[in-house]
Length: 88
Image (cartoon, rainbow, N blue to C red):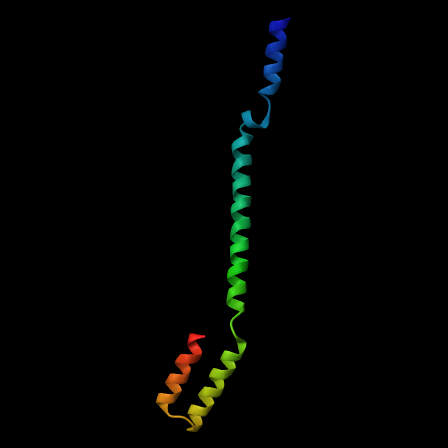
């Protein structure tokens, strides 16, 4: 009986998820979920850093273009100011 009990007990322990074919699939799915979460978080940080650009700088460039087009500033002054605005 003791021998039967050991075989039955070990047999029950062998039916766990780690000894089945699903263990590999489970681990792959778990890894894919972790990778997806990391990518999602990284994209959120990248999106937030890009959206924090100064919206006033595009308006300043438009004003600069208008001043250059109307002849208020020279080409050299226009290029200088445009470079300064693009550095921000």
